[in-house]
Image (cartoon, rainbow, N blue to C red; front, side):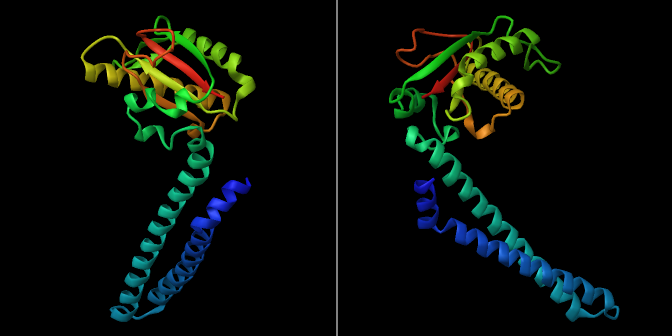
Length: 222
């Protein structure tokens, strides 16, 4: 916590957030005043209308700044504090090749559970795979073996697919991993930012004990 607070203070993200929130509060007050002025003014009062337009423009700018600062806080507080010291910043910005060779994957001990696509998925109404009841039970059992490490250790859902072209395998692998990620997050109440997704197509990481896979792998980093 000291490290995270020092980083937040260094970047002055808390101060920036407080400043933007105060600005938003002042803009809201001005907006209420401008609306009241327009409501009580004579029809065709251009000054009141212009004042309202300017206030609305200021409110939009303030909300945009607040969104930007909030995103910065998320990346610094959640991802930098929780993930970067374990070897990466954001899984969404990593390619499968970078992930395979990353310090995050190689520099830490891990627990890995392989789940085959057999009985795990079934075609949905739009031909996209869905997690079956049997698949949910398999995921539940896998998480049960890892539960003592959660939620304080990051969990990665690797997706694998062996059918189709390279692009089709990538899309299917990402979808499979995302379906399992959503289920785990909702079923066990884990924040989405602590359960990552990595589409691996059909190529497994080195020293994983398998040369190819069709399904998903749950990887808990310790």
